[in-house]
Amino acid sequence: MPKLTTRSAHVLAIAGIALSSLLVLGYSGGITSMTQKNGAGCTCHGPSNSGVTVEIVGPNTLAPGQKGNYQVTIAGGPLAAAGVNVAVSNGTLEASTGGGLQLISGELTHQTPRAPASGTTTFSFAYSAPSTPGSTTLYATGNSVNLLSGSGGDAWNHAPNKTITVSSATSVADEAVPTTMQLEQNYPNPFNPMTIIDYRLAIGGAVRLSVVDLAGREVAVLVNEEKGPGSHTVTWDASDMPSGVYVYRLQAGNEVRVRKMTLLK
Image: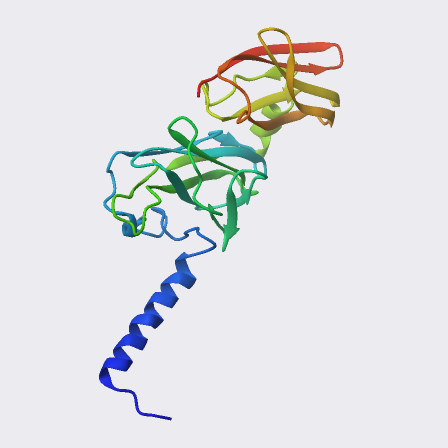
């Protein structure tokens, strides 16, 4: 085998470092280990706090083992597209269908950079609380990119860490099965293009959750199946709907609840 020159060895060392970095951080266009849990952020995309706003939206309280639906929103910066890394201190993250994320080594990252809708890019995911009471923290870091060659002009920022309280089994049992059917206000509201709706059932049975416009036309059916008593969550992706006020309607047996929500694009 020919002896390596000093220059050749140096080139191979750099290539090895680059390959190692790619294996650690690059997953089909995504990134991991970049949140405040265990990393310094997306430093290859420029300085932090440069006009990029990242936010985690979702329930602040869950029962032990309960699954909740969450979103990360990214705004500001060049925002031709955005990417994200989500991590958690305890519990389990899960990529939601159509949410634009993939699960790698227990963390979530974008599958490909995602284009914004009216100035905001949204990624959706699910989180299951641990089986023991206490608290846990969700971390997220988002990058806002211009999709030009190289990383010049790109920017990123951390989201404020989100603390989730995992309620004790006794208090959750009282809270999870209400005495009457409840339909909560969607969040965020106004929204674009995805929003989360929570509802709670006193008894199980056939449930229908639908969305109608102000002309009374049904534009989406979010739930139409048997559901058990307790808390339930559903996400509506209104990417193909125009801006406006919509009414969401929950029916279980003879009980009906309605609320309004606003889509702003």
